[in-house]
Length: 510
Image 1 (cartoon, rainbow, N blue to C red):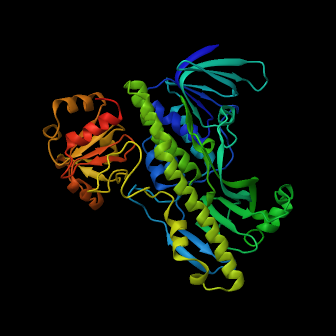
Image 2 (cartoon, rainbow, N blue to C red):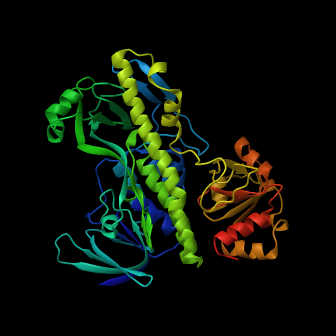
Image 3 (cartoon, rainbow, N blue to C red):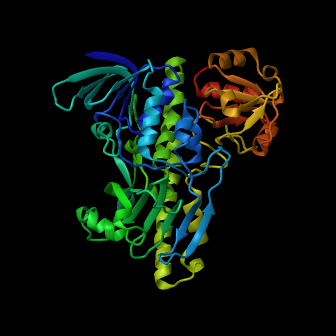
């Protein structure tokens, strides 16, 4: 059996599932290869940030998942005696969602899978393990084997997305090395379901205990997670035993009040692959990087990889753009990822520092430097630079908007009908102007933008109340990338034709 595809996705966890959903919208021919016999029905990841919830909200039947996800009331840092160090209420951001959104992973996977289950663009191959891949000219040939070793399949594709996890077969087979960012600790993860009539706080709580740092996370309704750091010399198998778990949770619950859904010792590591792209093969998610989970950015970062890469693949495959633009994938994602890892490690160290302050009765101001707290709480999603954004962006010294994500909000058209800004953008390039956009562009630019299915939005045709967006529009005409990040804004030195020409040069369209 041999089949030809535009793109093959290896690994059908949440990152691979999200990639399949995004690529399906571009009508590409896709194969999904997954060595398991079905989607994974155990809890693992349990948090998505506001930006990723905004991305997922673009999929059909999003309400099915939204109604099952929920935000905790507070994010807390406590001492083991219960004293609160810091408490932040959880509010919606400019993306329209809370910065922390807890969920039960089987429900997320079911939603993402069902959303594309009947798609004519995607063929699913469960119980198929990738055992070999080779490149000849610009075509990749993949070989898979069934679990009983009786059936092999051969696939041919132009592009391969490695979403096959931290122990990625593809990454290892390519000989891509990883950079160890010097963080490695074992934690015991316990997912429980409360019995009827039993309740726990609806919070995300980090307990800064010098004897054993731990976290308590509300997941959804009756489901909760405890994370406890293993100490030197502790045996992982013994720590996973029901007796040990019963003792560890005895401060909060009796064994009769809950059932255990998952108990696993996980390594909290900080690593990133030195290459995320080799020819037509791309590493995404855990195959490309591993992030300590203190800031809850593991899965969200993997989905950011997908968001960054897939619109570029669409332009190369469907619009015949030069594939050199795909080099921007690692350029744009890696620096951001490094900041995310640094922030997560800083948060882990902050927890340790607070625990030692508790033990030694040191005032917090003396125990933790302000810059350490700022790095721990501020770096997970921030823009890389106020001046220069590497990759496919127009950078001007007159403004800092290039590389920023557009806020999400509602507008009203002339018929007083409410529309979402994201709906107007339609997942393509967009130009937002305070007048007739065609007056600002020459015929050549208009022709190129038309070929790219660019959305032209005259903001004067709408009313809105978003102050952040109003400030951006006041600066000039805006070119928005398909991933909702601002490519550039016109200014006194650069008109719309000029920044458009730089975009065309970058995309090899001139």
